[in-house]
Amino acid sequence: MFRPFKRLGTFLSSKNLTKSNQRYRLVHEQALKGFTDGNYYDKSRPTYPTGIFDLIHTRVLGSRRNPSKTNQSLKVLEIAAGTGKFTEKLIKSIKNMDSFIALEPSDGFRETLQEKLPNIQTINGSANSTGLDNHSQDIIFVAQAFHWFATTSALKEIHRILKPGGFLVLVWNGYDRSVDWIKRIEDEVIVPQYPSDTPRYQSGEWKECFEKVCSNSNSNSDHQILFEPLSFAHVANDGKAVVTESEHPVRDRVLSTSVILNLPDKEREQVSAQLDKLLDTHPDTRSRERRDLYITYRTELVWTRAL
Image (tube, one colour):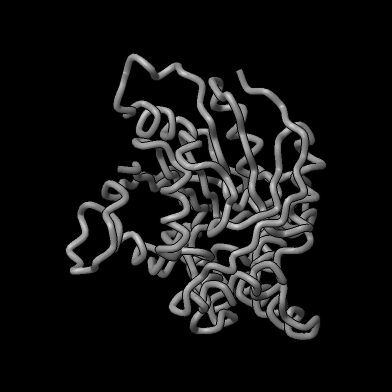
């Protein structure tokens, strides 16, 4: 049975990053700078479709090595829990939780998370230094965030705290690029705002750290093999399940992107104007009411198991 916990205020830093990981450390700080207004982020971002939790049950939890123990209580950790967009559905979908910890480094996000879900344990910390005990967690989730800290040091820390055979599960709501106007928004409005070295889920570069520590790696690296090969699945997400009504859901979503939130007001207004121009001229959107227009997504599920 899942039991509520008191909040923790322990600060856990990421000082153990190597020089080769400085890019991620700096960009992570950039993400923290952009992701400060938890309420705005929470109302602008889509939630996660029921189908993704069905996949977690059938493809991940259903593949546990000892079928006779599939109903045993689980110790669950969510890294970079944000404002709880994924958390609130996750804790309802996994019935046999013994404990749940939400780790989130952004003060603004953590405040929103605690307001929404006051009875869960929250920690101010990083993926590189969780402070949790060795082999203490059955399953670790990261939603919409792993690309920000995709390093071997983070994977080593995750492996340290996972029980042998425990799962690491990654989830992303990625833009549905099969829809032309959505693809153009991403390519023409959003991507140009990113510095060239900014980690993005869509680039796929986050997979590189797994190549060094997964059992299917062809690398000649001296890294210890820590995880099984990655597995992949996805479901559609219509993007309509947001917390509050909006006069312009597409604009809210685009302007909630971290690098755009970091822009000066004048430049953010220019991005907004560029977006409106695209929507006003694209044949699939120009005649549609803005309040009824939503970005659709492809929700990706990626998982592996600790060796």
